Length: 404
Image (cartoon, rainbow, N blue to C red; front, side, top):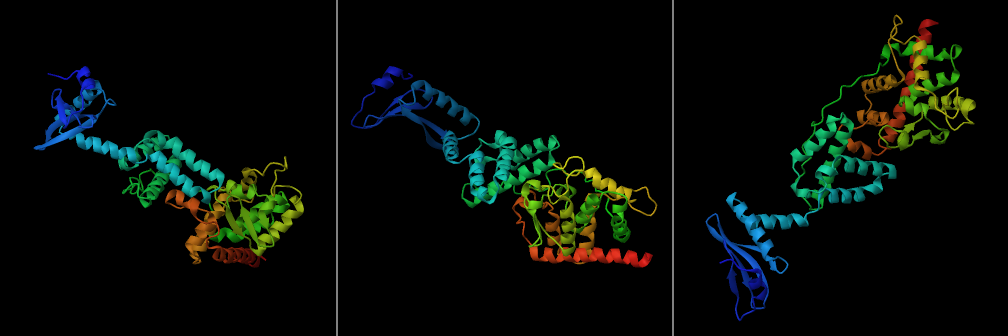
């Protein structure tokens, strides 16, 4: 006959442990000290076992019967309820993915600027915490990570998808190193994000450099001198168009022959160093005569508090005949000179890593690019930039020699 709530409450201590049966194998175990425990005897895999339901009065008779029902249901499914309880207890001691991610973020943030640290946390919170944040870190599977990444990919945010994937990967690397988990569910997901079709900007072939430099030298006769000088500096430094156009005088150390572009103006949000050749210094000194009193190196002709437009430089290149419509001249755009420089420098045997660093290119393995030190290969890059400037001088001279 099932036990009643009154029997449970009034059960007294004895000189030895005893049981009061309920039904379906459940009983109240009354210890000599008077403490009362709910237990369930059952058989699993041919062995007799006991499931510890809880302690009375923390667990009432009604709650104990509900737990018995749950245990019986698990047994019917071929699952050991004691093992399930043990696993739940273990999971309660394992931090969630969100907790581990926050610990990793605090561990890394001293290496970052405040703005970069904020972006990293916001990216994780916005894109992964809803699906993964409350799960025990050691229970997350590769398929769950893939589902998160594919959801981001579905909105065509491919760069974000790659960054989130890489963030999850390094969070788990941290977790492994600190004994929280033993495997990395994002460790083998390279290539999971589809590649965006790349549209290459038109670049100038090496053989057309001499003629281009000659046209550029004569551009001041038909256009604005500041536009001419902006293109000269762009060709000499092969930075991105927006990095030239947004340049500020405070970024230049002409005594140290260095241009320090702050992280907030860089595509990858990492400070970039540009060693300045003597030819670059000469061009900058000429520019200083024109705009040295302004904050911007290349202000707009209309409003000197705003930067020169991208179209100004592009149209200047087109007016020189490099518009794809002029016989014997290829189409070129300001950004394309990066590809021209990269191709020639690689042909000349310069260190490919130094070239990539000078181009401030993102590394293929995602967020790791953000940790690449901005001064890496700086000595090689300094020599390379001077060689490049001398090479351009030689190309210009070859045109004048041939056409004089």
